[in-house]
Image 1 (cartoon, rainbow, N blue to C red):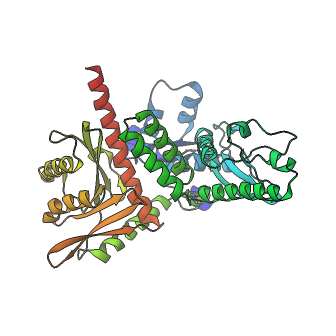
Image 2 (image 1 turned 120 degrees about the horizontal axis):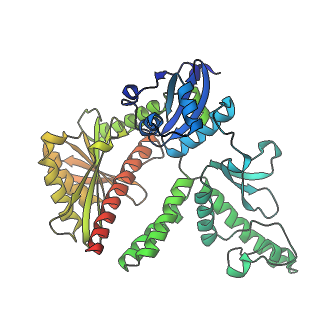
Length: 446
């Protein structure tokens, strides 16, 4: 057993001890003396471990809990990383109360084969020694999302997942394998054949770059589609495009390898510290304020053509979600005007400074207009305000010169500051959308 796992803090299994557990995603380890007997994953470590203290456990689980003396945990950044770390540790230590994962439950990879006509396929395992691929991506525990992304890519850049045959494939007849390698190989005109193969390889190269994270063009197209469909009140199509965008972001999100969490159980704290430090560097560059980013708040507005308008406030304390501090706002003023709605939210927030505390940094989802409004209101209290525009993930920064503010656009570099800011913005959007959906359902029931 590697030193870092054996020296994890061990907590005696009891209700009193479980009250102070973190609510982060992560992996937990049950110990019988110095032996690992069970490893599990959790979206919320506190809630998951408390569930083991219920009286209605099944026989196997009760036997495991009765055998356990202590429990340890390792916090991670996401549910995805929890899944991967759990699989990694189970395979390494093979605890007696774990069901050994079967091959068909292994995480899924996306593989681009090294062939005359490269194919894009899924694989449960990738043998790096075979060198039969151009690229492979993963692992991804959710096969559903992987297949959703491949369908999205296929609609935009048709590709082949089959070997050469004597006839065109079914997908080629509906334009999803175009040009089909089987058709290209049957072409007798060498110039046309060369041109078709070049066209096919070009599409594979584009998909390869997208899966490596260089997907700005398709991301922009999906944003445009969402707005276009929303403006037409075609919410089903808008929702479909949003699902595509979420799937694409899921498949290209940075993932910390399980081994790193295993070698350093405090890696999550180190990552958060690095994220906050990088955000502080941006602030120190543009603001004459030295502040510790203890409390960050982010605001987002959600509505459909001005109906059931609502707003969210999410709070990150010391760089981590603080869900007990989240708040919803039902908008009472001009519901068809985002600026008017944000003004109402800002004024209501100021009235609650004493009860909720004062933030060190406020992020507003929007462009220059939204940032300007919040800066004019919250700046009086020496609170730093930043805007985050979805277009290319751009920060909007108020710059004061000669008693007036200019609003600078700052394209976030691909570092840990961007990761945290985008996570905060996405959480605000999710929270606003959830409340908005609830209001819509209530109005429909009425």
